[in-house]
Structures are given as structure tokens and as C-alpha cells.
Image 1 (cartoon, helix red, strand yellow):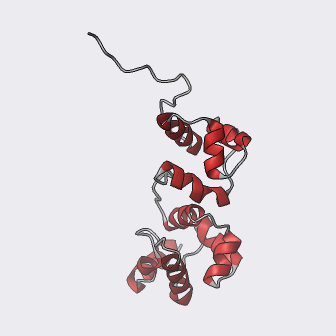
Image 2: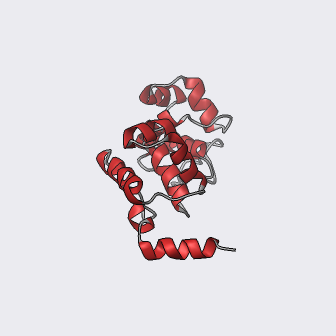
Image 3: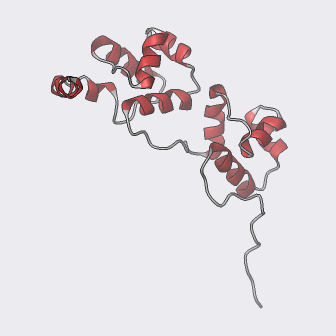
Length: 162
């Protein structure tokens, strides 16, 4: 008797490039309908459809539920502190304003950090680190403790000099 696996649905993503691709793959792997995923995520079925077909990106507050459904955070690894901070904030489902308020910082400071214009140092770095620890999402290796190292700071300052 010959047996073989059932062919994948034509909608099954061949490459996982976007969050929508990850979402569609997980849904198909579990044999769920979009409406069932929408119920699990407490969103409209149109949201799931638009996310899966990359017509829209989920708003930041939906990301924790989506990552919970997926069982992982598919965002690409951070290559800089700015990217690590942005990814950590989004994974926690926070806006820049919410992060600033929770950490006792100014929203414009968070925006500058995420653009890579400046890096947190001293007390602001401590507040940022403590906030992420408090919510159970420590910053990745690009965290403030690395950035507050005086030798690293002076090296960075020298590299920015004309």
C-alpha cells in the first residue's frame, strides 16, 4: 500500500517573510479557519484576512496576542540597540507613549532611541532596563548595561568625531 502526505494548500506560504506569512502558516498547520483565529485573537475576521494577505500590518496592541498564537516572535533579530528596543516594545504591545509613561521617561526620548539618534545612559538607561524587567521582557544583548559602559561610550564618541 502506497502512502504519501497530502499536498499543502496552495495558500500555504512557501517562505516566511512577513508576520502575515507566519500567521497563515500557523493557522493552516492547526487546521483552523480565519474566523477561528479571529475569535482566538479577539479581532474581526477581516483583520486576520488582511494580515495574512499582507494588505495591512497588525497594530502594536495586537502583537502580544499574535505572538502568543504563533508561539514565538517572528520579528527579525535586532542588529542594533534601536532595533532591539523597537522590537521589545512592539512585542510587549506598547506604543512609544506607553513605554515612556511606564518607564517614567519622555516620549521624544524613546523616539530618539528607536531612530538610533542617541543611546540611553545613566539613570534613563536604568529606568528603561528596570521597566522591561518589571514587565518580564528584558532587553536583548543591546540593553542599557552594555551602552552604559564608559569605555564603550568614549569609543562611540570618538567614532562620531569629525
